[in-house]
Length: 222
Image 1 (cartoon, rainbow, N blue to C red):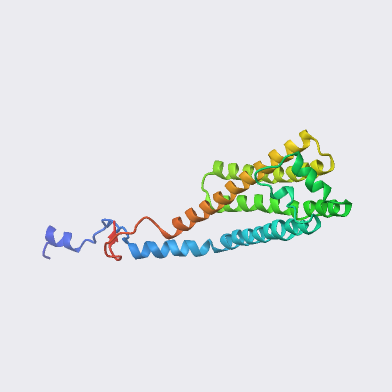
Image 2 (image 1 turned 30 degrees about the horizontal axis):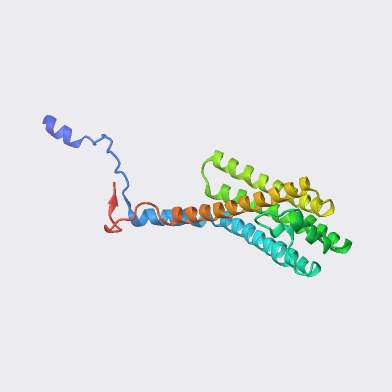
């Protein structure tokens, strides 16, 4: 019986060495598709956010345009204290108070306790949902929530002080109501700008993955 050579024996042995798996290569097109797929999965939160913003915009239109401006029909065209963005003094309050009878004051109070409560609450909710949807930092989300809730409390308080100033026109009441009115409009302006900026940054972040180059879109990325 012929002896088997060592070389022949080695050739018949299976190669048990583990082969190193090849690392998958990603192309720019594949990365874009993954990003778009993730964005589609985010669709439901986005719809909720824009629904809240739409309701807030509608309440704002009803409160400031329909209700408060409609009150001018009861005051002979004199604007309400709520729309004095630059504040007001005792003479302004006395002029408006002289044109508002008991029925007009009742209507003014009704507007404040309905749309005047709903609008700042919805505005605070809008700030919160947009911040939660767009911001990554928990600290930033908490700051946005605190500012939104603070604005809602401030506007409700300001509405109460304006009614108090009309019923009891003193220097202290008028000064407080005027200061709070100015503050509420300033904060509202910053909140609206903040919401717009957060939405723009969210839109840019979703549509600019940071991989846009002038190279072939099928270029392999190691």
